[in-house]
Amino acid sequence: MSSESNSKRVAYLGPEDLLIPGKQKQKPTNSFNVVAEQFVSIHHCVLSHAEDISKVEKLLTHPQAWGQVTNWTLNEGKHLDKIDTSSTSKAAEIASKEGETHAAIASEYASKVHNIPILYKNVENNKENTTRFLILSKEKAEDLDRKYISLVAFTVEHDDAGALASALNVLSKHGINLTSITSRPSLNQLWQYVFFIEFWSDGRDDPNVKSALEELKEKTVTSVTIGTFPRNKRYYGEKTE
Image 1 (tube, rainbow, N blue to C red):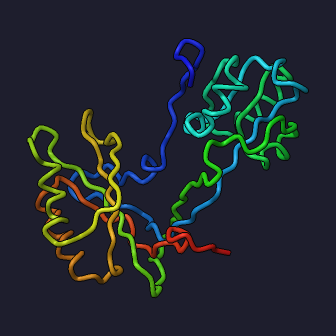
Image 2 (image 1 turned 180 degrees about the vertical axis):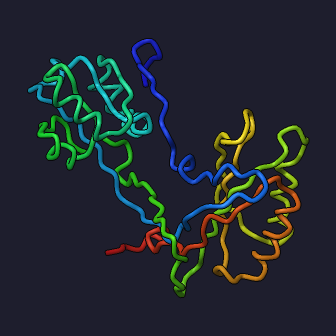
């Protein structure tokens, strides 16, 4: 976003917020499992009832989308007041109701749903722009002849120096390859964070992973496995139906 003065910011939930286990401090549990992942190509459009961008005053979209369309917003859209919304679809809905002074960064599908024309198409910086979605179920993931990813959430003592490093060293000790780490504020207490880690495994029955997770419990305050699921073929660049 070009400047803080012409922007309105709203709080929003990231996907990790929805995965934070229940508030039980001793034995956190989750009522679902992550059983699969799906990669979806994301293409952004500028939607407006205006016939020309010069007639538009305000541009709306979800906070995460701004960073994906900076080439356009810093050029054709540099004069616009930028306003955050709870979703790109909500941005399209508002822009459709407000008329030609408003525009939205949203999908082509949102244009059809909210009956608002496309002013610019495919304005994303990266034409390979992709979002990963996690599939949730009360069942376990099906067994496939493919490498797996395990997703684990844990907390550590906030005031213990090196507590996070100690927990992560467990994975290193067992030769487990960490693929990502994310943190989100805990629901239990202020200034405590839940760490989400993903790593390669050979499935739910991987003995090395089981051993590592048992040891991880000794290094953390809480620890829960949210899911072990097969890596999507698109991760390797393969096309999926």
